[in-house]
Length: 304
Length: 273
Image 1 (cartoon, rainbow over the protein chains, first blue to last red):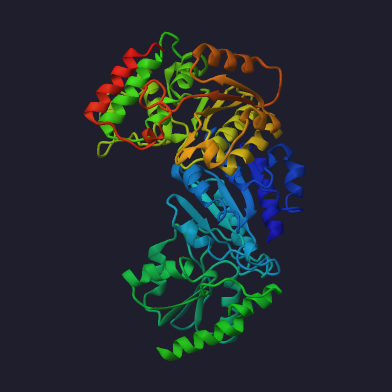
Image 2: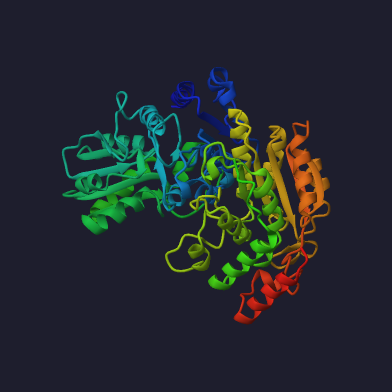
């Protein structure tokens, strides 16, 4: 996924001289290809994210197409107000890339983990939110980012979970993608890194479940969500993000109004990580490993 | 190009500020009055707007980072014909466009500001874009001395110097006050000329109400051979032009009554600006 990102971004810059990449002194080896291919389009703005967003806004106003890279703990969280006022307010075509979302920086603690960024970003008008699950979805998100007409937040989480699609996808903006056809009326909806987990759980414990990936959280095809929910026995939403304000909330908001169905939100239960450890360890700490999620789904379905 | 026949008479501009403040029953009068002369000089002699259009391609950029002073900019935009009398007199009426802080959706205002420390960085980005495109456009960012407490100003100052944005100029409205008191009481700034100089700006201090001195300083910095970004620390008086408002921070918050409006206009007319 990181190779796809690196190459995709360099391709975009090669094709469009208006593209500039700003980074807040992050992405050490990630931009080697970009810097080789388009050295003049690369700007390390220093450890100064607030100014970096303002600079991106000024450059976008003058006709450039800035991509701004940082860790999702900083882009968008640290600079949320700059995104609101300097960018989204005027729908400036700036693509914000928040890398390492969720618990990727598992050993570094709370400052580098972000499980509130979708909620914060979703609440800002004019800000689109993309959340790809694998390299194919990421490539499609990058492709679409070339034509965006508003500010866009591209959330990149754990990058080496493996593919969820057999090959390139040609998704429409807002489209949900079915990654598994189940025989029954159980629906798993997931985004980002949790799509892989949802597939694993379905294969192992719930063969009747259909699994859908949501690479676009805003805008999202609401009619599609409702169509999927309609007739389902239950919907399970999975995300590496707080259960407040993220993907599960989004689905709940839609179905509670238009297609009531029981929804289980699998995500981070409104708390920071307690301990240090590997990524897999932290997923277990938060009950987001496949085994714990499968058990919760079992209890949820039994209670029905 | 900008029409040099316009006078941008500071006394008339201050009248408009008072008229808007009275019609809209608004606050933030003192901080608008302190930047009137700076804006008059910029619009009269320095800002280029092809075909007199506020959104013309190739225009110079004026960024009012201290969005609270926006009434002074509206006053200039009235003289330019970008705002009509109805917009001035209808200030703050329901459904109108002119807000109490700079809003980029109003043609003539480049940025949305008022949350402080935003416009400056956007101006740095505009200046970087102009440099990369080789357009020769100048960018002026007016920043308050209270506003300069904000961290992004200093991030942006580092950035502007590092990227040698020679056509970028910060003009600090050093009126010595911020919302809750004097700058020395709240968060002492010491010498902004030295601070900005240490950040790599070519910096000068000047009387912010002396139009000839302001004009000469802006012109001299514009001619400078240095690749450094430029800074003018404009020593100003909050409430300038209306004796009973000068250096009285209550006029950051106080609204005009019919009586005080009349008194303020009388003060202006008695002023020998």
